[in-house]
Amino acid sequence: MNANKSKLTLPLILSFLIFSMLLNSMGVIILQLSEKISYKGLGFLESFKDIPMALVSLFCVNLISKTGNKNALTFSLIFIIISCFALPLVDTFWFFKIWLSIIGVSFALAKIAVFSIIKTNFRDGHLASVMSRVEASFMIGIFIVNIGFGSLLSSDYASLWKYGFWLIAILSIITLFILWPVKIDEITSQSKSVFSGGTKFLRSPKIIYFFIIIFLMVFVEQSFNSWLPSFYKNNLKVNSYFALQSSAFLALFSFFGRLITSKLILHFHWFRFVTICLIFLFLILGISQILITYFYDNARLVLIFLIPFTGLFLSPLYPLYNSEVLNKIPTERTHFFLSIVVICSSLGSSMGSLYMAMIFYEKLSYFYPLCIILPLLIIFGLTFFLNKNF
Image (cartoon, rainbow, N blue to C red; front, top):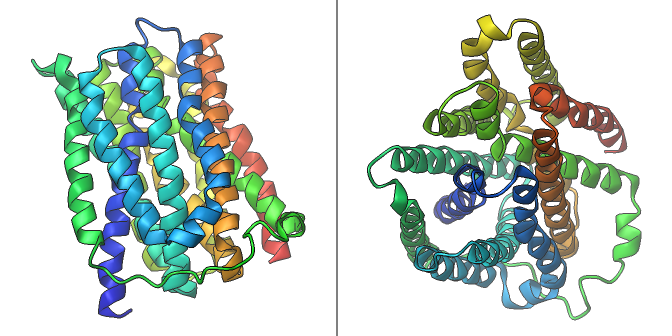
């Protein structure tokens, strides 16, 4: 990897770190608003982020192809800077919906841009390695946002928690200054629409399996990232600060999982790696459900430390699936392919949050691990078909 490629990796990592902190602030928002708004209502709040994300990802494909990935990433960071500075200044609930919509639109632009940049600037094992490192920064973002906001909420300045988003805006400004001078290989602009031939492309069985897996992967990740603090507070009876730390330590283990993956994937086949991770996830979640059901009084402390450990095995999956398929996608189809990835991811996020919201609303949260095992079983089965087709 040459020096320019190394310089390119840093702004991509910082961009995903920023969006991670914003997207995963939902756990904080849910905790802060849960006393005023029902879990059922909070479950729909996520859709204000995910629906615009899905719509924009589909309609901005041609625009990104013409303006370039670097410009798309730049504009997404500018939107973040403006919205994060505005959030603490507007003290009404409806602005959260607008703010989340801006976050969703910006992330759609950024994700397509970042993945396209990785696709056009890295190859084979290095692509998977860089993808895992960029996605690892996503986990660190979750860790930082939960530790940071958790500390703020437990301090004398808890009422000023929304001003924490100003720090994210400042980091976005720094990222823009790092990104701007870096030279990036762009996908050659096509005279015809990137949607041409898309129907045939989407009918491929391997692509269909992949999109279902991506939908379910984000479905599962959302069940952890936004709702694990509520599970800790409601079922394991810890206070808001320690509830937020559950997501922080889940993210910390996830970071190590993706960092380790970025090194090991250069030496191991992706299918073997994914299979081992899924088996360990089933074991941890199965043991957790047994402890909750039969040994709750004696095992509560064990559960507090055991469940975040799932991050070590859950986190490698999403970047490995993405990098394996992205490696085999023709360059001219990259933007269109990634737009569908963003749509599946955003729908998975919304459905995962609604799924968990109904579980908490119906007071079934004692079956939290079992509810996560069910979509993982489908992923496990589809992975065999995906590997067979590739």
